Image 1 (cartoon, rainbow, N blue to C red):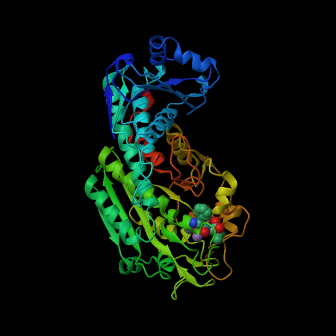
Image 2: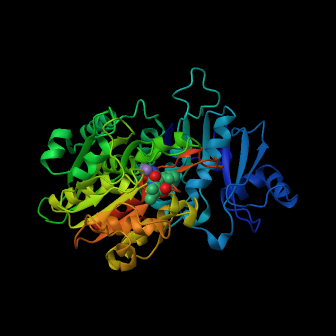
Length: 501
Ligand code: BES
Ligand code: MN
Ligand code: ZN
């Protein structure tokens, strides 16, 4: 889909459909007002009838046969005083999904009046939402039923600053493409998305974005002392791949942000085998890693002034003949020994060496993302990811950067009690701490591998993929945490906040 800025007046634009916003107080906004006048009050009638209440992503279609725009789609933006710019991604996304399923090929979309003065963010979110809404989930279908056919989307500039809109459009396109890239990696089934293939995708992404890439195979991982990572890989017939991508945006600085993502391309649980119900969802267990790879590609293209390294320890977790047995003890890269109580707590094992390697490369800040614990889904459901860290100031920086993106993160505590629960009687650590606070005992385990480097851990088990579609998003992988990663990098690099431009 091609997204562009257009300078047509709403009433004279040529399109299969014209999309206009309405807030839940029922007041018509900007372009909607002009179109309503031209259609003799047809939009006001729809609102008066109560057919649509203007709730966020609520849709109402009006045909306008003789007009150059053939239809008007009214899309709710919710309560006017609860509006946040990221809602424009959902506004555009729900329109694109609705119209795309109905075979419409070109759309024009109006911005709400309040976009004036906030052009870059507004255009960015519209472009991001439009692109992510047209994400194709039909790659494995011979005769795809409902792939979107929208070819072009024009954002109507109205009285907005055109240069700022154009900047925002570029930004939103980069974010949207990164989100969709991460989703494709996650959606691809594990027989195709092996660790080797994930490394190949990372190498291609690095090439496209001018990044350095290094993939450590089993032999090199062993030389580095990555006993925790390799303990997970040893049960699988697929060779592991420890993926490292590097972007040097500020060579004069010693600061280095490390993004570390769990890259379990399939999690059977290993010898502590998972029950069959919904085990197929465990192809998404590399969503954190996919987020790192996709964010790195976007960062390489956006060229912020910051050094960033992306690290993805990738392997399957399988119950093969050489698999880890409960009770086995392994040594991680930092020399700490780990008693494996439950082979299904494998994410923290691969991340342990991922975090150690980030330290070895000289990371001065670390953020990791992982579909780490079912307990996180119990705690926060699908509404938010957990954020846990060892440095409150850095956690706040992360949360502040992530909030405007619309991805939700909720801070949870990291008390020493949780570290106590991870002590083994026979080794330095054990890999499970019992049922209480499962998300936080997992985080406490990771903390043992970061030393004093400011670090934030994101548990995205409940947010990386969704079982249900929404108006603006297909079911399946969501692209979390790509938006937050990109926003954090921009924040640390001192890119002006979109809203301030
Ligand atoms: N990948 C799973 C966590 C998960 C569960 C993600 C459900 C998404 C949805 C992880 O490797 C795992 O199995 N964790 C165990 C840890 C336990 C054995 C301590 C869990 O949460 O049950
Ligand atoms: Mn597991
Ligand atoms: Zn897992």
